[in-house]
Length: 244
Image 1 (tube, rainbow, N blue to C red):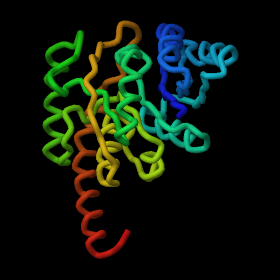
Image 2: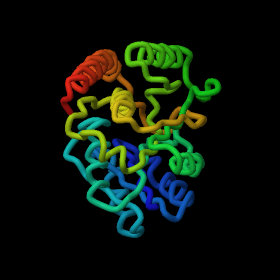
Image 3: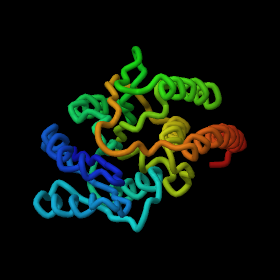
């Protein structure tokens, strides 16, 4: 089964040349799709050079910084036009260890959605300040309380989907564009009846480049959780009335 790893990029010129060989060496069936948002540091040009030399690497160039959620939706739609059986989300900054890819692939043979979890079985985060760790843990509790998701790490961005998950959720109705995108896709996967498992990983804060976290992303995550809960309630009521 072919595997595509989608990696959004914005100003990642330091990381991309080192990341590509580390990812591709994990499995001969693995390919990469970069979604570059017109990086001003030349990241897109670097990726073009790699693509010209390696047919397992692909790229979509967008006209500007359009956000994480739309990047992944763009990648998902690209996947559904081709014959990939599983799809990853992965960061470009080495916060996600490429060596964990085979473990997530193995788990995807039994589960529809596999989440690389920073919190299952304990905290596995390196180089985060206490304030950010506390914020992340509070967000985890908040999301679980409002949505009812039984996940230890509902905001993880290291995930593996079986193709049927992307076919089973309406990509055009995804509204999140920041890190809440992870919450929304997890929640809608659950509502659609797909199975999920969390696999423990070690998350390491980026060594090069700049973090994309900001206040706008945090506020979006706060309100989207309530919106998802309302969506879930309405979906349940419609099903009880016999409507799709």
